[in-house]
Image 1 (cartoon, rainbow, N blue to C red):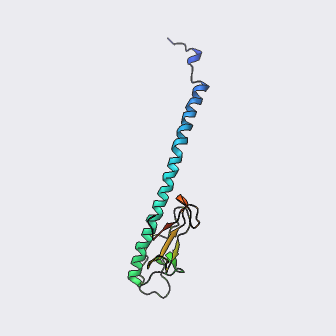
Image 2 (tube, helix red, strand yellow):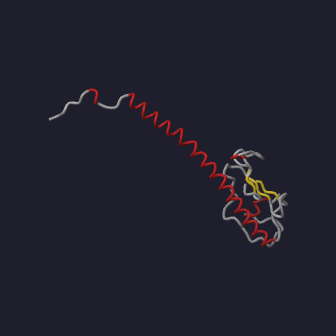
Image 3 (cartoon, helix red, strand yellow):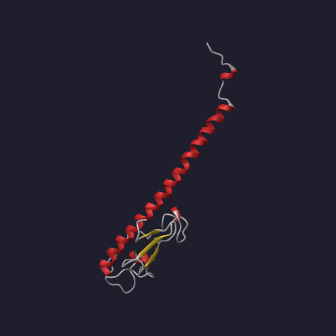
Length: 144
């Protein structure tokens, strides 16, 4: 025996569908911005970790050679032996020098302006000096 379905029980209505779509849109509007904020914070953390890795590699470079790479030699000296440097025991980084998490090159300066060690800078999300929030510079000499 087959039961006959009433026309009103045949499926979902347009109103029900609109209510479900509205709920999903509201949920997305609340959740997605916080997810992007977490993504930006993760990039800042990654940039700090990369800078710390560079500083460790630069320390090993200096132990072997007695000097830090010049500004002209840059971080590439951690991968490729500079000319006229016999004590180089590298490479000091396992892979090529990466770009920062926003796909900009790190800025390397030696002699640095903030102590005896080199200055390494990521200009943050905007790739420009200065800035606030996620556009702020990430600096080797500062934990901010």
